[in-house]
Image (cartoon, rainbow, N blue to C red; front, side, top):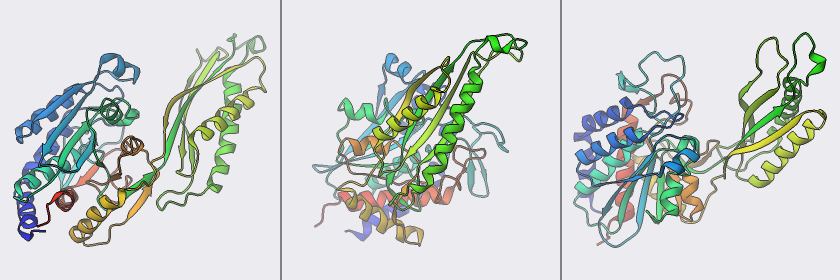
Length: 412
C-alpha cells in the first residue's frame, strides 16, 4: 500500500476538521424526531450539504402509503455512489431520524453547542455523526490519489427508530443498492459484529366501565392488566438465567415502557393498553420468543373470564449474528482503529438492535463502526445532553477512510 496515499488521507482530514464539524452541526440543527417521523426536510438539508461537498445525491422518496404504514409522516432515503473501478461495493449506512429530546437538557437539543471540544445535541452521536464520518471519509479517499477498484455508497436513511423497514430494508428489497459489504453506524472503540433482536408487543385489556360508586357493575380492565403485568414481571426475573455467548451481550431483557387507559377518576376503567420491549439474544429463536410471550399473556388473562385481551405485534427485529465475510471488514477496521486510537479495538456484540441486521439478513457481510465513545451510555444516547467528543469524530473518520483504502486499493 502506498504510504503517500495514507499520508494524503490523514492530511486531508486534518485540514477539513472545521468543515466536518460545521457539517455535523447543520445536521443537528434540523429536527428529525421520530416520532412523529416527519423527516423529509432533514433529508433535503442533508442532501444539500452533501451536494455542497461535490457529491451527486440520489433522493429516493418513500411512497406515502408505506411511510404511513410505518407510523411516520415523511421519509426520503439518500444514496451517494462513488465508483472507482470494477470491484466490491461497500455501503456505509447511518440514520438521520432520532428520538425526541425529552426533559433534562442543559443545552438546546438542536443547538449543536460545542463545550470544550464536545458537541451537544440530539442525534449528535446516534447517528447524525456518521453522516459526517462516512461523507468525509469518502472525500478523503477520493483525494488520496490511490488506484482503487470498487465502489463506495453512502446510504443515509430515516426510519431506524421504528425498525428500518422503509430505509435500508427498502433500498435492498427494491434493488436500489446491491452492496457486497456494509458498515453501519456504531462507536469508535469497538467493532460490533452481533447484536440482540427486539420484539415490541402492544397488549390491550378490555373490560366494562361502571360508576365508581358501583364498581361491581363493571369489569375493571386496570385490575386485570395489573395482574397480567405482575406475571410479566415475574417472567422478567427468570431471563437473567439465559446467557449469551457473545461478548458484550448478557441476557434477554423485558421492559414495559408505555401504558395508557381509563376514562376518569370516578369511572371503572374499561380499557388499558401497554407496550413492552423484549430483547432477544442471538442464541434465541425470535419466533419462539414471541410465541412464548404471547402465550404467557393469554394464559394470564384467562383468570379474568369477563376480560378481553388482545396482543398485537408492533415490531420484530431479528438478532444480528456473526456471518462469513465479516472478518475482512473487521481486519481492515481493527488494524487502523488500533493504530489511530492507540488502544486495541476488538469485535464484540451489543444489546441494542440496529439497521445492520437488514444488510446481514440480505446476505451482506456487515459490521458496525463509526464515531463515538465506547458505549451508548457514555454518549448520553437517547438521553438528555447527548454528546460527541469531536476528536472521536475525527479519529473515526480517519479509521473509516483508511479501512476503505485497505479494502479497495489495487496492490501493485
